[in-house]
Image (cartoon, rainbow, N blue to C red):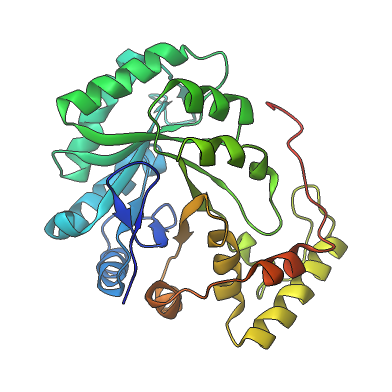
Length: 301
């Protein structure tokens, strides 16, 4: 039986493992639709996309595939980046006017009348933050979105929104090798703002991929961490991905780990974790962390 968890101080209830859909490329292909439908069957109910992904095609794919299951899912998307007309790159468009305008295009692509969680896709301390918050609050009042959050790794930006707004979540990379976000965890816990983790599986470096440098960590440090994961997973009788997800979700501020998959085979590997996630003890968590250098943010602190 899957235990759903309240996302921060919202009334959204989510399974601990969600699906990030960015890796499902190419539109509403049979494989992509099958993956999304199978995810719902497994009990995954949090689906995360963005208007930036494939110039909106990812939202369109998610909307087509999940429209018949809309009442069973929590649908999250992101706003704040606008593609240039020539398609060469995108520009940061952080303004109340842009957010209010962009939501209608996302609603149309997602084939829905409301978005459960609308996230600012980035952000800087120089943005008109008060106006941006006004824009999100207006969308809540209009019923176009239920809640809003951030997708950011910048501590200075996260602190401002935590202090000034009603964000219910912050999506950020957080995993055994990248514990930098812990610098903002205390303020998020105090405000009951959830963390949605991405990158929990460390790009496969602690599982089956050859070791390599990761952020500020050398390949030697990554190799030592990999051996610790292998040893503890074997002693606990669980898989390495199961251990890495359990590690992330063992922190009380983390409500969801959003995982990217491309195939049904990859998705089915998550089945036992969705149904019954291993509960990592404090001792096991400490054992994993020992000897892994804790990184710090060097900018935007």
